[in-house]
Amino acid sequence: MPSPQQARAQASAITSGKTVPEAEAAPASQLRALFDRPRLSPGQRRIAQYLIEHLTEAAFLSITDLAERVGVSQPSVTRFAAAVGFSGYPALREKLQSIALGTLAHGPATAAEKTANELQAAVDAEVENLENLRRDFADPSQVIEVGRELSASTPLTVLGLRISASLAEYFGYAARRIHPDVRLVTRGGTVAYDALLQAREAGGSWVLAFSLPRHAQETLTAVRVAREAGLRVALITDLALGPVADAADVTFATGTGSRLVFDSYAAPGVLAAALLQAMTDADPERTQARLEAYEHIAEQNQFFLPS
Image 1 (cartoon, rainbow, N blue to C red):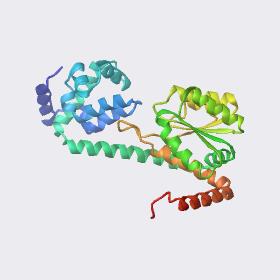
Image 2: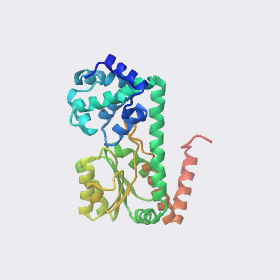
Image 3: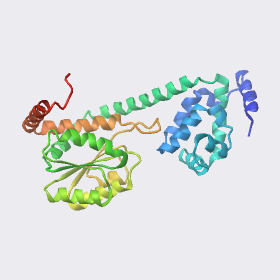
Image 4: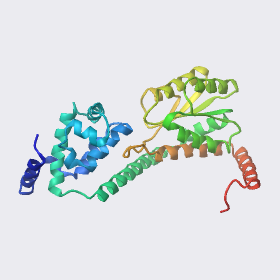
């Protein structure tokens, strides 16, 4: 393994005429491409961020030193290396060292530039997700049809466990304004099973489920319980293929932003809003009556600040 001093000497050779393949692209871009392919956990993304921000130093650290700098265990570093496609930490470190030569040749970026670039990359990834969703909406027939089914299901169950609960709560909050009986399920296990069985017994026919990374085992079990109870399941997720999608009746797959430590959900949020729109259009008279009644109550009780 070359020392940092040897790496700088090799970098001088690059500037005097020799080339290194990794130098063709900006080092930060190479690392983003390297770390963006797999589905990383938040802990693994912390390791990725540290490597991006401290590449020229981190590329020459032992696994013990890197784990200590990031604040994770050595097995966590080993699992991270495997998650990004390497046989182990030594193979990952070798790749990082080759990329680090390009950093030394081009000069290190400032901390502010690194942060700005990471945030811009996250926004760019979400823009791409939204562009893909826009293309999917070229044929809105499935959204319109499922919106009609969700509107007709009384009660309508909305399921979102763990990280997916936030979008389920958004959808449930809005859907209650236009639907007479919306039941939100954000706890898994037997609590979810009870809610699903009761919804079916009360006459419900559909469940809208959210399954976003990292996908919970209890979400898969709840979807299967819903199907066994006779409920149909529409799923909003990031994967068109997989066990949860296979268990659902209808799947809407759209990308999530995975550039930062925690995912962002621009495209799934727009997709959820599109289904809400389809529900309002499915029964416009009921929608208008309920919205007007709610606005009357809100004004009487001063729910909101004056605009």
